[in-house]
Image (tube, rainbow, N blue to C red; front, top):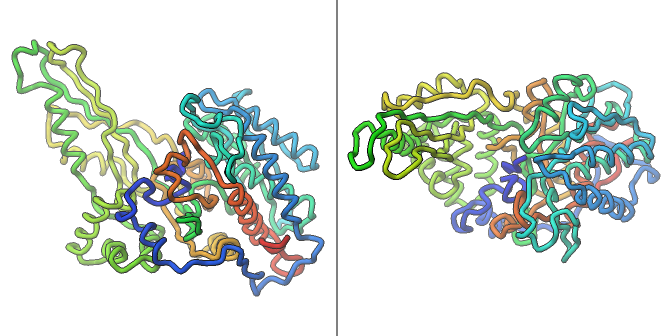
Length: 514
């Protein structure tokens, strides 16, 4: 997946705008002006929950050793997609669950691209909680890696490997959370379900698509935790966490220009490439209307509250009822923070152009493929009609694909028990604010959201600087700090126990207790 950030999941786990020059991007301003915090501070248990018995508290030094063992084992399994071979990871995970006495099943449409689901039973007072992580990774060019991509090399406090932050970090954290719940016999008010799915990086038919269509009762839940969000470190300090509460939906649109074929020595007004070039230029300059939703409105409000005044004015500007103020703020974001501009609207990016086959022949047809990322409530037909008006050329057809690659899901609620629990856990583990975010890319949560499950994307702390330096997700030196992997396990543990343990009686262990 894209980490998005997608997962920017993909210049770091939702490190907003990674890759943009520091003077131009808000988080870098933020880094210079936010007060530093002692990362060792862990806030005590919430007032509504009593302290837990000492016997229920994990011994984190032992947990960290085991986490690293499982994480490295998963990274060493070559599950690049294509071809996938996710069965290697599914079999490994099931063997761990089997040894621990945790009921687990293999679910498969393709015998070599399997999924594994495990469940710990609760009292049933509340609906289940689902933890997801995908086991496939994107392909690699091994010649460009300093450390072998499937060696899980430890160097300088980091673990290097394909999937280190997309998405075997989530898989390992979910696994460890399940193991700790079982070993410590944590009382649960709701079932806790773990799903490791295949095919997220482009073949959802064998993974989450298959599971949600054929095995939904096995994963049906009230809430879901998966990838898509992240925690941002700048200059070695954690500054804020983002939680993905919805995402755009991708749809392919083609521009097809047609004209008269002829000899290249005689230019023609009907030249398909010329018409296509004009259409592409008009689409490239087009910015559809700004439309905010609960998540994006909260995102810009919260980001403005923790940003310096010269940057915050633009975040507040896009929220303004004054069209001139809104337009000026949008212009600034488009130039300086294009990821934020994309959050404001349905976007269209012309990414592939084809046409012609030799220099002395005028082709009769030329095509451009657009990557269109629609807001969750966008009407596809309405958007296509608007695009046709922008193209404004009868020689160019606007062709919309017949179906979305991923379904449309409902926005997860910011006033829900789950979002509040995540905010509280982020405070306890990192002592930083939480900002809801709409993913501009795609995750498997689109499928679970479409089934009525409220989903929240989280991720480990990633250095903002890693993406531009080539150490982020999908890069040739993908890596994660060991210390941040361990803190991410604690974050998962804290969130899950907050949501699944009884509010009275036995309570969750402290996230920082050793």
